[in-house]
Image 1: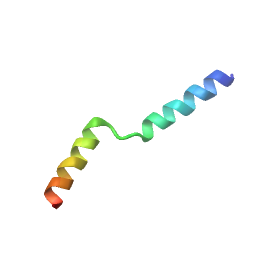
Image 2: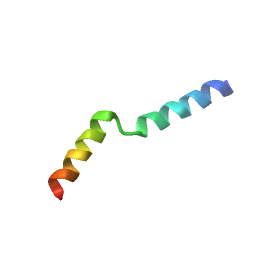
Image 3: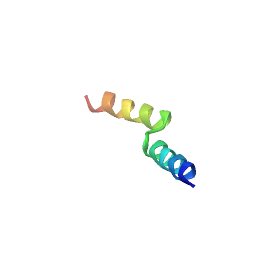
Image 4: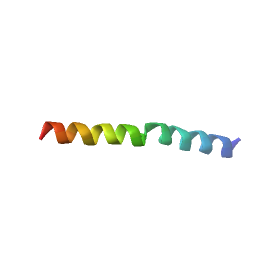
Length: 34
């Protein structure tokens, strides 16, 4: 049971991380803003 809980927590952390596509979009916004 404990191992499963830890795995779920790791997955949640992953979901909160930005994807490569989101990172690229942010870069574009920064370039347009400046």
